[in-house]
Image (cartoon, rainbow, N blue to C red):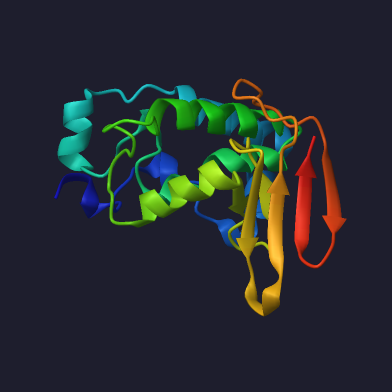
Length: 190
């Protein structure tokens, strides 16, 4: 079916970033952090070059479109967080908040695209913590939290807590980060 002869569910712009096992190698291939950041910027502003209807005829799951970026399907979820690997990590917070505001409103249009359960779970992940696992890396990266405090129960009676005590709905950028260890794990965004 259409583009599925070459890609599955998204286009080449999305699959360019699917080297989570060697992101440092991808950064180097793009000429370092500056080239990597410019390519990310281009992803979000490059026009489709065809109508959305023509795009969907080839890639029906390619939705939640911003430039060549598709927020509506799993292969793209980690991409906005890649700005955290550049010298402009603030762009992660800016993109994430823009994507949440545009594609996850509190109404019937609140989940874009291919909803097979993963998009819904990931939207909760965004909304609760706004942390993304670094695929292939033993780390989490920070986005733009939407709640003052979220606590997740872990095995063994431990907890993981993310706090944003100065949270305001229009405050997109965390001003600082402190790690605090108690009986569980905690991060505090200031």
